[in-house]
Every structure is written in structure tokens, then in C-alpha cells.
Length: 506
Image (cartoon, helix red, strand yellow):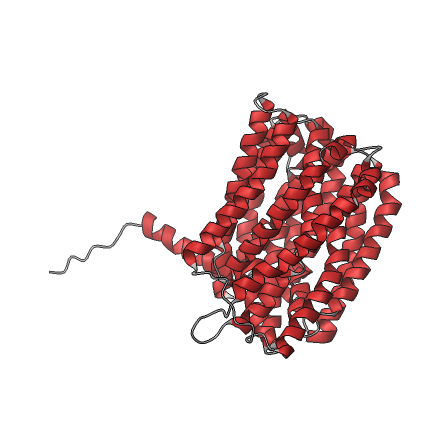
């Protein structure tokens, strides 16, 4: 876990720089310069491209991590792995882009009444699919090569800086709406090209391959895995965007735009988890290749705990300052009715962060086909809850539906993980962390409203709760890794503060 912890910290630095840029973009620039309908348009366009991209990838991301160990040899050669990595999504693109064009009229009818602006710009989804497919493919290749920093830099900082620039230019009337959409789609083309240039720089990639290397047993194993994974993706990925699409269809782009900003507030919770998962997944694949369940489950416990710690602490800071956040962002009164959306989505995000790595283990083990049943279950639960709650409660219903589906689905997934690979992420430290967050949240409600200025109130609450969090986290000994970091930090502070002893001996 040591390498994972160190790598995740480095990745988290990039995430948080990107998070600051993203926070400025989503919580200030977009609300200030874009109408909620336009925010909804940009979100639905991106999610549409991402949804079809997830199908067109044909399981490239997971299958790459799972089967890359089979291609490596003692001479550190990949036996044509890059060729097959490009081939798989190429097949997906050839299948799904024509399918989207064929089904265009049906898709448009779904949004025509409430989201006419999306219908007007629907054609931009087609090139977006292509750009996203190969950007993700190149990024995945870099991850399995344990080169996560630069791809994360491109994703978290590069793309966000470009998007921020585009929105500012639109706000100052330097771009029309059509030009803003065009430039936004082009950003993902730039990200794809730059990521490809990076992997060419650190690795001598080639399209040369030996067809004989993939013998019949390995070929069947790969195809079977991809087939099951694709079916699981069909249901699982639709659910991820289901609330967005149903809100756009049933309530319109205005409500979707408000929901988009609330989603971003919650999205900050899992910033550290992305780095942890990226570096942990290849290690899990190596362990499960040889059915080393003990090592994999130890990894699961460590990842789960640190996901819970980071996610719950970030969410706590968001929740204790939620009223201040709405008071600070432009047009905050438009978004304030979504306070409970943040609560429901935040809890769902923490559950996902804590238990999601169990699904990763299942997908990389010989029991991967169970992920298909899990995906169908979560899809059914998500559709049912969204159809029931969105017409009644609007965006709050969408968030509550997400939380309900999350609780149901991860309960089933954890049962599968426990049954098949004896994976149990819970320890006494899990309970300690939950108790710590509840205690600190309760203390926050005892703090008086010290200032009517939201910036001052947020700073005052965050400093007090932050200090208590650090002290109690260390005192409870919830994470040995975190305690080690704190100990080393204390030693460094002592070195700089305390006077150095001089040796007077001659």
C-alpha cells in the first residue's frame, strides 16, 4: 500500500489544482456568464458523447488493465499490445457512430419538447464520441505503464483551463453559442492528441504485432471477457447519466443546468479517489491473475479505508459550508433549493468511493461475469427509482433516486465480493472514521454564526473543524499511513523551528 499511498498523494496534488480551476469554472464562471439552459446544454452534450463512448470502447479500459500482464514478458516487451489496444475501440467506433446517426430521429424525439436547444446541437455529439474514445484509450495505456501524472495533468488541469477560457470568451461576447460549442468539442480533440504525444515520448509504441502470440485459449478468454464487460457497460453506464438525461427530457435544460452545478459541488468529494483507483487497479489485476485473494483483499481494505477517509472529510467540509457556498456563487439563489440534492448525492458518492473497488476486484477476477448480473440489477433499480421520483420531486427526486439505487446496488455487489473472493473492506477503523465525521458535523452545528460574510464564516468554520479533524484523526489512529505523514511533518517542523545544537568540541 506504500507505493499506492505515495502515488495517490502525487496524483491528488494534480487533482486539487484541477479542482480549484474547476471550482472557479463551475461555481463562478458558468453561473455568471452562462444561462442555466446553456449550462444544461453543455452538460447533456458531453454526457451524450461519454455514454456512447463507453459503448464504443468495448470494455477497453478494464480489459487493458486485466490482460496487460499477459502480454508482458521478462524482456519488458508488450508483444504488440498497443496494436490490439487501438483495434478494439476502432471496431466500437465503426459500430456505434453509424448506429447513433441511424437512431438520431428517435433520440431527438425524446428531448424535442423540453430541450430543443440540445436537439439543435446534437450533431456535435458525433465527433465528440471519437475524441473521447481515443483520449480514454491513450490515457488507459499510460496508466498500465504506471505513468499517471501527466495524463491526470492533461485531464484535470489542461482541459479545465481551456474550457474556462472558452466560457470567459463567451461571457465577453467574443464567441457565439455555436462557436462556444465548437471550441468546447475541440478541447477534447486537443486532449486526445497531447496524450498520444506523451505516450510516444515515454514509450516506443509500435503497431507491429505477432498474431501467434494470442493463442486460441487467450483469444477466447479475452473475447469472452469483453463480451460480458460490454453487456455490463450497457446497463451500468446508462445509469450514470440516467438522472441527467431524464431531467433534460422531463424537466428541461434549465433544471438540468442547476443540477449540473450541484453535481460538480459533489464531484469534488472523489478527487483523491481517482488517483488511488488508477494506481491500485493494475496491482489488483496482477494479484487476481494468480488468484491471490489474500493480497487483493488486503488491498481492498486499504483502498476502501482511504477512500472513505478522504471522501467523508471533503464532504463534511462541503456540507458545513453549503449555505456559504450558495451565498458566494453568482445567482446562488437559483441553486440554493438544491441543498438536499447535495446531501443525497454526497452520501451516494461516499458509499460508491468506499465500496467501488470491490467491483474492480470482481471485474479482474475469474468471477468477472458476476458484474453482468450486478449491472443489470443496478440499472433496473436506477430506472425504477428515477421514473418514480423525478416527476414528483424534480432534481431532488433524481438525487434521491441515485442514493436509493446506490444503496441497493452496492449491497448486492458487496454480497458478491464476500461470497466469491472473501472480500470484506470493513475494519474497526471504518467505524472510527464514520464516528469521527458524525462527531465533527455535530460540533459544527454548535458553532455560532460568527459573521454575516460567507467568506469569513466559511474560513472560521473550516479552520476550527480542520484542526479538530487532524488532531482526532491522528489520535484515533485510523490510518497508519496518515499518522506516518503527520509524524514526519511534525519532525520537519521541529527541525526548522527548534534551534540547532552546535558541536563545540574541537
